[in-house]
Image (cartoon, rainbow, N blue to C red):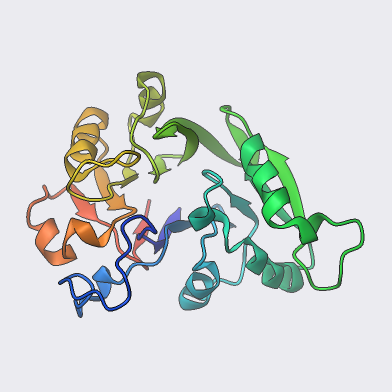
Length: 253
């Protein structure tokens, strides 16, 4: 199994144009973060979790030319806005793109991408097959995805476990019943927005406390705002089994 972090940034706390903070001025490529998304290669099959506004750029940067399905964590635009660009995979693969999400996500896609589902569609628009998921394991191409039902303030959001890897981005609460699904992980990718507390995201300290509870072998933080600080400096504060993620990071399980 190969995991590629396509984006590790966020629209929350994004600096204004002309911001002169040390992160925005950093020459370290690890401080240049696109919106969160992850690419999974499992048993010869290829999946993306979330297609944010930077989806096309991420796919081009990583040279991704195969995609078997798109899986959504939730319906916020910074996680769905790039869905139109799956049309390139429709053309390359000559098939509709399976898309998985809870009912509220699929309803949002119908509203935001109404032209995709119109009775009379013009040529070249994305071709999608929508599949509703609930808090039950589901299979795509023989690969089992286990949803992790968490809260993003008051909004229900899914994280996902695949084998001994788990991915949770927009989260500030994981119920104990769902924490049980996250035991025995080799790698956990977990959202940690900034140092200060936030209404809908884990802070750095809160994320560290959750990692202590879950005890994965290795953890990478994602959904990082510029308020977290420079990559090289933050990592000096972290234990060896916890690192900051960065765009393009590849993890092999």
